[in-house]
Image (cartoon, rainbow, N blue to C red; front, side, top):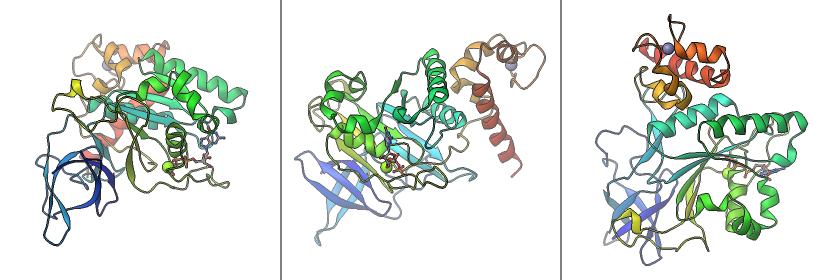
Length: 330
Ligand SMILES: Nc1nc2c(ncn2[C@@H]2O[C@H](COP(=O)(O)OP(=O)(O)OP(=O)(O)O)[C@@H](O)[C@H]2O)c(=O)[nH]1
Ligand SMILES: [Mg+2]
Ligand SMILES: [Zn+2]
């Protein structure tokens, strides 16, 4: 029977079937997908074929073609990589200016990864109720920066939304991003992914946890990914046909908080392609193989110097370039 993977615990997968039932399924140890080296051969959002054995155990025997997938490389590991999710329409990065502080390097690495896998991305700034004046200014600056790169941004207080989820769905422009889509929520631990999910669903389905008072970091409350249907948004259909355009369903994926994004699985010449601002300007560099690290006639360097490209973006670019350089010597 064909099903949709909506939960992944590492040892088993929760699969949702067309008739509305779900089952715990397993994957044979030798189940591998050609071309992708990852710690999880089957990911949340995957469509799979499930066979039930005589003893009642369920086995995933086949993986249907993916529309897309998004991979995170574990930091400092040259091959281990993890598929965050498959068949996603939007990756929403939850960012907090403070409590905890999300770094711009983290934001840019996430966005670059989305570019590399051609997954549309947006940024949801959360916990704006906690920001002081200076932090609100930083929020405004970051929103302006990412909006100028055509990434939609939102500023919310998930806690505030939790007390009136109806208002979120009825009036907030945020609701439009979830409608009819599969949205992946990602971000550092403690930024409020599960809190936002609960607010959207109007129910406490996901556990949330306070951030540590000593380090102002999240405590990794969510330990495995799970996908939830959003009631009242779009039609809760499984999948009418193979044709994506006929599909109308709203799902949201809550994921465990992540610390960092390791190097992308790309050549260093390619990295600039995943930074919209740098790529745009790089056409004017004197050398076509310019890496934008101080070569003569580098248009990117010039644009950073005159403020056309944000320094934080350039630094993020350099940090990824550094990663790939390092791995060469391993
Ligand atoms: N003040 C305030 N606190 C919030 C807001 N959103 C979430 N929190 C709090 O932040 C803490 C962490 O929230 P979670 O939803 O557990 O964060 P998470 O991103 O799911 O964390 P992990 O599961 O560890 O990745 C909880 O104590 C929430 O109540 C907000 O908008 N404002
Ligand atoms: Mg969580
Ligand atoms: Zn250059």
